[in-house]
Image 1 (cartoon, protein in one colour):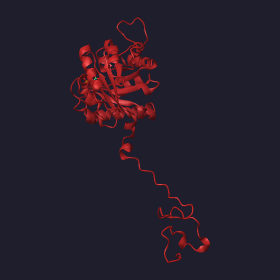
Image 2 (cartoon, helix red, strand yellow):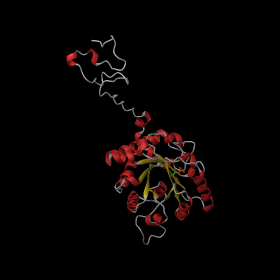
Image 3 (cartoon, protein in one colour):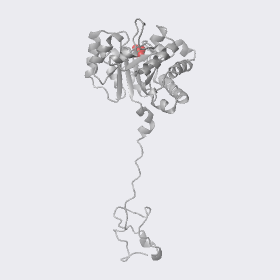
Image 4 (cartoon, protein in one colour):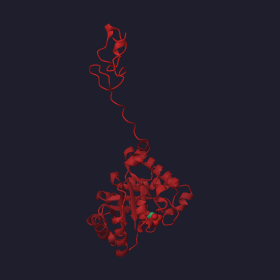
Length: 310
Ligand code: PGA
């Protein structure tokens, strides 16, 4: 039945007008509602559907959770003059704010680096011992590193492992003590060329990670650095696919052996001949959460590497 005049009022949705009188609804349903002009009593527009999440966010949500991390490992290089110039370059450069930057200074320059670098740039020691103090000539402790205002330490670097003969066990003890002392740890792992060629890359990096994991209570202060020994200082960078493959496996290892939360949140960074020229492609890999950079961290191109995801 149509309303008087043979047509529905433009102010009514009309839904009730075709319902027999005895069953007439006083208010139309959402399904009947036809537009913002509807004046049925009590009518309000149905809530709009929530917008779909952006596709990029869906695909890269875990990447987004993990803040990009770029460490510079100055190793045993530089002096106050050259490092001072590098520090001025970093202090005045435009650095992507979503990147966490940490510079690994030689022990004797930790104080100098910390007092000269802009506070938004972190500083790391390149090594430390496994106890707080004592008769250990030539060593430095996490307590001393912290006393210089420095918050990070690099442990298990391949040069410590293979030039100075540090064992997995010693590295594990250092990791435990550094974390207990409140330092963040950049824990390095990586296979040698003969191990890669012999097909034991996974076994090697899992064993190294296992020993580190046994000494970690809180993964919030740990960054895992995958540095294939054959790529360090050689100019032979791992391809983005090679890096991604190992990083993905390491994340799966963390998921299977620690927890989903740790696997999703721990930054796994790549090291080995990273340069301004190759950093962007490496940084585009899903499981590459940053870099540990040696040679190129002493040059102005370090800024390009910091901004690899900008
Ligand atoms: P590289 O060194 O960038 O000079 O290869 C990396 C590292 O040793 O951490």
